[in-house]
Image (cartoon, rainbow, N blue to C red; front, side, top):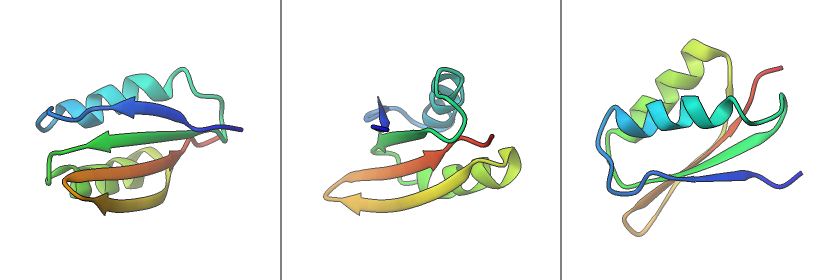
Length: 75
């Protein structure tokens, strides 16, 4: 199953997390949402988001000035 891509580059907190929450509604349980963000605060924001919602943060990495997150939707 291919990951759904969400581009939140250029958005500041809390918009990347809010957009991800909305995008996850369209993802099947067990599916993966890949988010691209440029806000440095999104690293902690997505970690906290996953801890409080039960979704799994599969990956968190930085490529140049873009932060990339892969989140598996909880069942």
